[in-house]
Length: 484
Ligand code: UN1
Image (cartoon, rainbow, N blue to C red; front, side):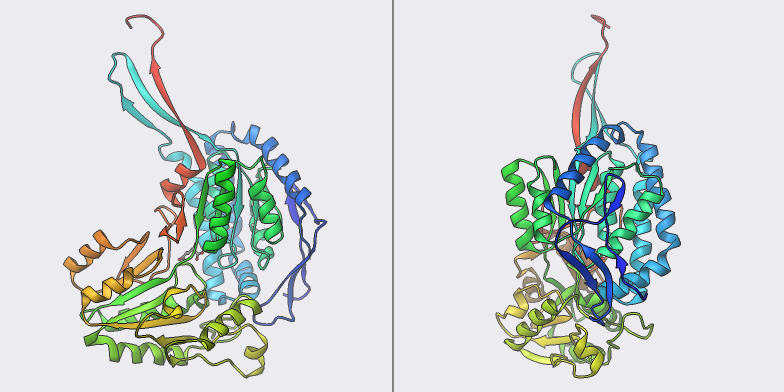
């Protein structure tokens, strides 16, 4: 990529420049490289987008679901075709490695394909009636205009998994991606446009909090799907509740991996490393806490620290790189400040880089910290490559430590003991649980989301997405002749 891409929003089927504040995305590995540049949308652009979405919704809701799905399937093919090119752009704009970027673009295609086939699945329910000659049907209608607000860390996969179910269920969308990743947002909108999505069905606006608030507060927006921080998610939920519209908010995590004495050592090391440092730890599902039982702790901590020290950190476009930068200077400063105030023992990383590329880019070293008691690094989501470790005397104590968090998104437990694993399944309050695999990852056909400070409203993906993006009508259906 050489010259910056011109940033445009997409409203009512037309690409145009906004009239708001200047907006540009830079490469976090090389902040002097401008990726996309232009002008943010304004509150009146949001208004135009909502109007366009409401108008387009009248026809879109009446379009057969199979036809709506066919557009998503066609868009999946476009996304797939561009996987290498857009994957590299993603790596440059967001900072995850090129392999992860390409993987994410393919995942967006997979999500679009999954919802492309939604019309082939059952779309309502049929119940018996206690009355003669009657059946009870539960049918589904679109909610209407949906506001979608997405984070930087999965610039195309998360938008796909919010937008695809919204569209296939007959809704129209006004979407604001994070201001740091507008290029990949444009790519997804272009794919849907070239797949034949009618004008106004998807509207893309750019900007930061003000544009997001304009969507959330707009009286024409009838549901909101958000992924981001717990603080912003709760503020959005409060506004939406006051307006009486449903919210789906996927928020923070402080996810634990528990490695018990009987775990497969190599498998657990590999998975903990992936969970903690892939995407530079910038996933709500990342492993940010590690709990080790006594018999395995010394050896395991040493192995993880060794791997962290030797991880190849650098330019995400370079195929040898295993971990790229964090998203912004503000993120780097926030994480570095937390590390400076640290109340634990640093066993790997922790110090700023001094070489040219990594001092100028937004790099943070993969860091492993051991703590023995209450500590901010144990409780607060840092959203970066920092793993806080605690030791436990036995499995019981280890699992109690795993539960010791205000968050409830994901967890991983490494053990060979099926009885123990089943006990965890029954009692650990998390939305996503991995037995013998890393804490991150999500498939499009199964529910995704967390409890307590991690999530509000219905889960995402699969059948759960249908519940959020539709209203039901319970139909008492009887023949029209007396006694029939
Ligand atoms: C994953 O674990 O692959 O923002 C997906 C996030 C989550 C998605 C995680 N909503 O990181």
